[in-house]
Image 1: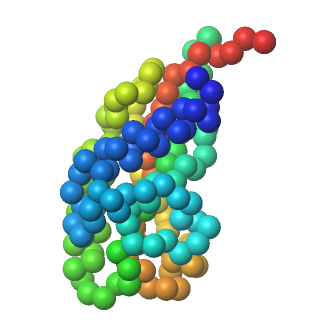
Image 2: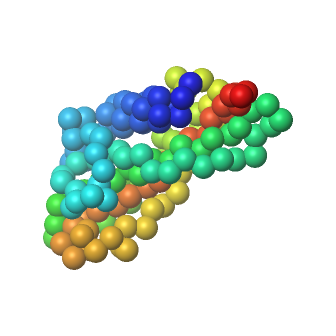
Length: 147
C-alpha cells in the first residue's frame, strides 16, 4: 500500500476510535481532520498528519512510523476546570492508543503516544486557548518495493 494511502487509512481509524469515546464537553461530531498548525484551532478534537519516519525493519521490510497530532481545544482558558478536562483527555488518549494496536491496519506493529509541545506555537499561546495536544505514532511493517 502506498504511504499516502496508509496515512489516510490510519487517520480514518484514529478518528473512528475518537468518535466512539466520550471526551466532555466534546461530542462525536466535534472530532474532525484539519491542520491545526496553519491557524488557531476551533473548538473540537482535531486529527492531523505529521511526519513519517523509518524504524529498524528487516532485510525485506521497512518499519514505517506514521505520526498524527491529536489536538483538543475548548476555547479560552477560564478556570481550573479546563485543567481537569485536559488531564482526563490526555489520560484517555493514552489508555486508548498507547502500546496497543488500533486494529484494521495491515501489518501494524504498535502505537505509541507522546505528549506534544504546543506552547511554542504563538497563535495558540497568545490567544490563551485551553488547548492540549498528543502525538500518536503508528508503526507499520511495509514490504519494500523492489525496483
